[in-house]
Image 1 (cartoon, rainbow, N blue to C red):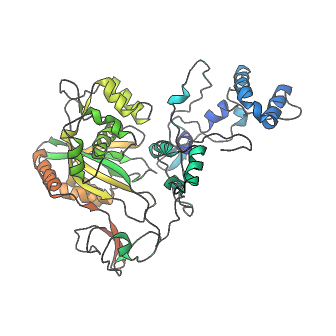
Image 2 (cartoon, rainbow, N blue to C red):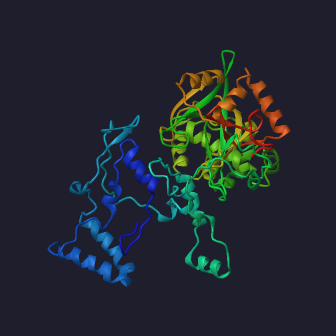
Image 3 (spheres, helix red, strand yellow):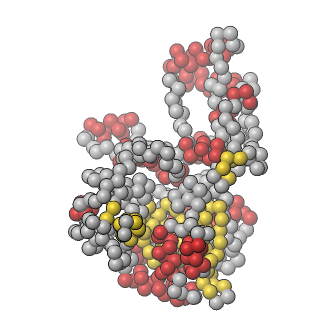
Length: 471
C-alpha cells in the first residue's frame, strides 16, 4: 500500500481472514492500532503531530533517524491504543454463507510494548503479478494462497539484480507476468499442446487460444486407511467454503512447499532415486512425500513419523500445539522434525494416482495421490481453519453421499473412490496401488465434453475421451 510518500506490505489473505472468517477476528484493528499515522493531522491539532507530519513529508532524508524516534514517541503518548471512533467496519462472522454477529465475541487487544519480535524471523506473503486474479474475474471468489505467497518471496530480486538482468538481456521473470484473462472457446487445435488428434465436435476447452495454460502447482494428497468391522474406511476432510474445492469432502493434502527439501535428511524408507523413479521425475521426488506427510499432519493431526526407536509419534498435546506452529509457517517443518527427533515414514506411503487440474482453470494443481495406513495411538482432528469437518467412511458410503447430495465431492475424488470401492482390506488396496505404480502412473487431466447437450468431464481411458493420447 502507498499513501504518497510511504509504502508498506499488505498481506491480503491475513487481512481478509481477520475480517471475514477467523473466529474472534477484528478486521483491520491490528493496522489501526499500530500505524503511527493513525491520527488526524489538522492545523489546529497538536503542534508535535503537525511538526512530525511536516518532517515526514518534507525531510525524507532524515527518516532513518526520525522514524524510530517518532514510533517510540507515538507509543509513549498512547497513540497505539485502539480508537473506537475511527472504527469504520462491522465485526461480523460468516456462518454457512450468512454474516452474523460473532458467536465468540471479538479480540480487543492493544499493543504489548514489552513483547519483542525479531523482524528477521517474520514471513511476509508476496502476491506477485502471477498470483493476482484474472482481470475479468469480477464477481468470482478469489481465495489467495498464503503458502504460495510466502514462497513467492524467494523469487524477488533486488533493484541491482533487476538492472543486471535487463542489461544482460535476460527474460522477464514469470512472476512479473500478470494472470491472463479468462476466456472460453469451443475448440482448440490440440497439436499446440502435444495432442495429435482431437475430435473437435466433442471438446470444450476453457482457455484462451494461443496462451499457454497456467502452470500447475506440485501438490500431494494422502488417502489414510483403517479397517473396521470387516470394512475398509478412508479418512475424508471437508474443505472450508471459499477455498479450492470449497465446502467439498476430499482427502487431506496440499501444495509442495519451497523448503520441502530441507526435510530430506529426516526421511526413512525412500531414497531420492526411488522417489524420482516412482513419480517419473528428474529430481525432487522426495518433496512430494514430505509434503504429503506434512499436509496430513497440519490438517488432521496424524503424523506419519517415527522416533529414534522406530515407534510411531504419539498424540501428545505438545505435538498438537507444534502442529499449529508448523501450519502457520512459524516453525519450519524440518526444524520441527529435528527438534522432536522424528523421521518421516515414507515407506508407508504408496503412490497410486496423478491428477492435474484442467487446462482452462486459472489456478491449477498437479497432485500425486498416496495411500497410507492409519498409525496406532493417534487420533484425527480437523484444524478448524482449512478443514471444517473430518470423517471415516467406506468408499461406497462416500459415493452414496455424493449421489444423494449429502456430500459434495470433486471429480477426481469420485473417480478415485470408485477405483478403491472394490477393496475390503488394507493389504488388498496396497497391493493394487503397488501394481499400478509398477506399471507406471498416467497423469490424468480432465477434459469437458458435450454429450446430448450437456457438459461432462472425461479422462484418458474413458470411452468418450476425445483425444488419441493423454492430455
